[in-house]
Image 1 (spheres, rainbow, N blue to C red):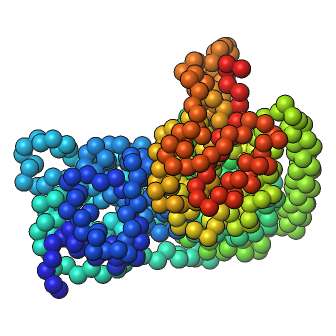
Image 2: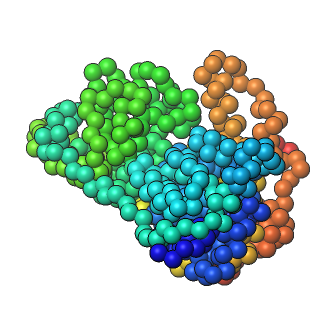
Image 3: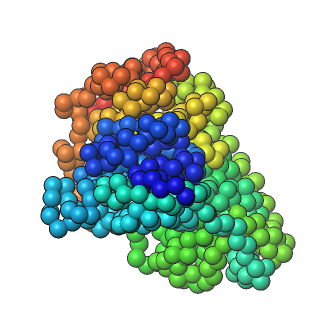
Length: 559
C-alpha cells in the first residue's frame, strides 16, 4: 500500500465507507485533515456555527438514512459544546461517528491551551471513545468506530485524532468497514415457552420502543398485537414502531413520571416488552410496575436492556422482527378459542372507538377555528391538506405534539422522527439533515420557542447550502413543558398549586423569530390568527429554499 499521511488516509477511509457528508465546525488543530478535503470533492463538508447544531445535523442525517453519520468536533471546547446533544444521540441510539482533533501527543505533558482528556470527557455520552496514538492504526480505529456505532444498541462514538499523529505516514489500506448481521431467530422451543406464558391473558400489554423500528418489525408488531388483542404502548419511542392509526396503538407511556406509566403497566395480566428497556422515565417507579404474578417476556437485540431494572420471566436476545413473527405463530397455537374470540372482539371495539374519537376531535376543531382562537388547528389542518404523502416530519413540538400528531399522524416508518433523550434543540438541525438526506421529499421540522433557541444558528446552515426544509416554531412564549411538569410534581409531593416560576416565562422580551430567521438568511412569516394559516402554508411550500413559520400556540403571561 502506498504510504501517505494519516490525515489523508482518514478521508480515504470515509470515502471507502460511502460517506458523502461531514458535519462540523472547524478548528485549528483539525486544519491539516480538513485542508485535505480539497482533494475529496465527493465528501461535502456541511458547516454549522456551533457544535450542538453539528450533532443535531448528524443525528438527523443518521436517523433519516439509517447509516452512520460523520461529524467533526474541535478539541475540548467543541466536544464540550456537543455533550448535551451527544447525550441525546446516545439515549436515542443514533449511529454517529465523531472525530475530534487535538494538538498532539508531544504536548501531553505541557497542560497547554485547550488540553483535556477528550476520551474521558466523551465516555459518559458515547458508546465508545478512543484516541489514535499511532498512525499505523488510524484506519483500524476508524473502522472499529463505524462498526461499534452501527451495532445494536446503536450509538455515538468518538475518535480523537492528534495532529502530530495525523501528519505521520501510514500504509494501512482503506477498505470498507465490516458490519455484523443481526438476523437472529429464536428457537421454536423458546417461542413456545413465551407463548405459554402469554396466551391466556385477558388484559395483555405490549411495551415497545425504537428497537422495533431499527429491526423493521412494524408489521410483525401490528399482527401480533391484533392476534393477541393487546394494547401497544410506546416507551422511549421516537420513530414509527406502529402506525398511530393502528387499532392496537394506545399512545406513549410517561416520559417524566413513573407513576403515570404504572397506571397502565400494573393493570396488565401479561406483558411483552420489545425493543426498549423498562422503563425510561426521568422519575421512574422503583417497584410495583407490574402486578404480582404477571408474566413478563422481553425481546431485544440489546441484551443489556433485558431485565435491566425489573425481573422478567423470559428474556429473548433476538431480532425483533423474526421474534415477533415467530411468537405470533406460537401464540396462535397456544391461545384458546375463547382467547381468540376475545382478541377479535377487542380489535373490533378498538377500531370503532378510534372512529368515534376522530369524529369527536373533528367537532372540537370547529370551535378551535373561531376567529379569536389560536391559529394552531387552522394551520395544522391546512398543512395536512397541502403536504404530499411522502413528507417527512421532525417533531420537537413537545406540548404542541398531541395536536400535531392528530393532524399529521405518524403512520409511515422513516417519515416521522421525534425528539428523545431530554435535550432541546434537535428539531431545526434534524429537519435540515432529513432534507439533505431526502432532497426529493418535503420536510417539516417542528420545535418550540424555547427549544429553537438552542440551535437557531442552524438556520444559517440551511440558507448557506440552500436546504429547503420548512421550520415551524410553536411559540407559546414559555417553557410550557416545565409548567406542566411542575404541576405534576406539586401533585406528587403534596404541594398546593401556586403561581408558576417566572423563570419558565419567555415573553419578556419577546423574540422576533421572523426577523431573527431573516438575519440568518431564511425568510419567514408569523401566524397569529386562523385566517393567516392558508396563505402562510402556501407561501412556505411555494418557497424553493428554507422557510420559517412563527406559529403562535400560546399568548404568554403578559396577555
